[in-house]
Length: 162
Image (tube, rainbow, N blue to C red; front, side, top):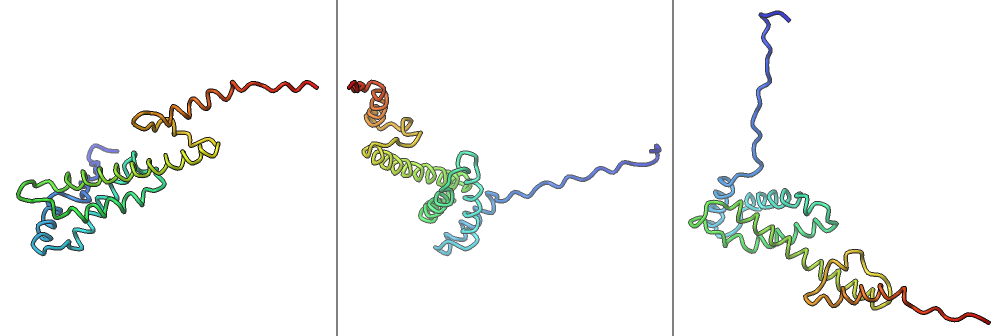
């Protein structure tokens, strides 16, 4: 390469953010004026929810789609509660709505899993692996399970001499 040749560097084009506060705020104000959710606001909330559901702490759940549906339902219920005169950050508001919806859904799934594990234990089978981690307030179920399995080795052997 000679000294006269110039090296052309590629120009970095900044990535367009998938959703901005400004766009979301404008759409919320438009929806408040119409007193109903616009299709564009619905698309924005779906986009935000789908991106939030891809976070590592939620991505691998088998019921991820159910969590997203529950979060979108909650967002549709509370979108009118956002007051643009009090805050100009709807992104944070709806992210918080999605966070709490995901936690609420996970807690209801945990209750269902515990019920299932208790039924399995009442039939004499072993519950799921994480049942010990999910103690109730008093820890009685997990303590019962732990005591039950600790005493399995202490069963006296029958005398089989003939």
